[in-house]
Image 1 (cartoon, each protein chain N blue to C red):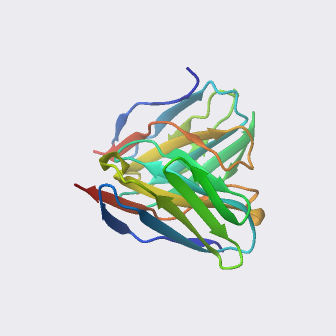
Image 2: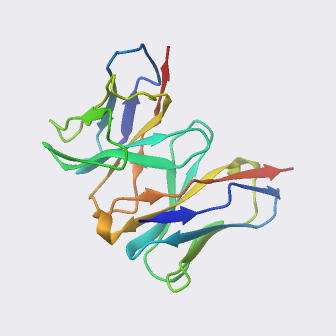
Length: 113
Length: 111
């Protein structure tokens, strides 16, 4: 089955530590996205990528980094510069950037120890 | 900038009809989308309105009026499994088409 897979489901970060969230899709989609969701809130865009080896900052990119070395993969690193990283992180993909239909992964809950 | 306003909570009974409104302030956009998210789960796409008017998909319908900067999601014959959060989203022209999401409406369906 085609889909988008995020791992791990739960992740804990220590102070000063960088952590990487995995996102893989086998939908052959060009565009991929990372969103952050805080309790009771909407989704805020962190980074997005239209094509391999290219990505752009979203609305809340500070303290995060991404890479897009392969079409299928779009990992997100939460760096130590992100002072409030506790949130639910959602990865998504779409066939093209201007698309109303995003396919989401099941999310990663990141907490700080 | 862009902003979307939705009610934070809505409660309805099983079998009823409920309307979730979305008002927005944006200069121009490709369309209005709706997503459903069950607690702790992934958002799933429900519907999309590129043009004004009503789009129907089974028990769910969505409406858009660009002149009124307003849209809504209509859920009919409510079921307990419809209890979830519902998000509207727009893809503004000046944002390269990226989706901007509202804060979400938590729908509680009671027996």
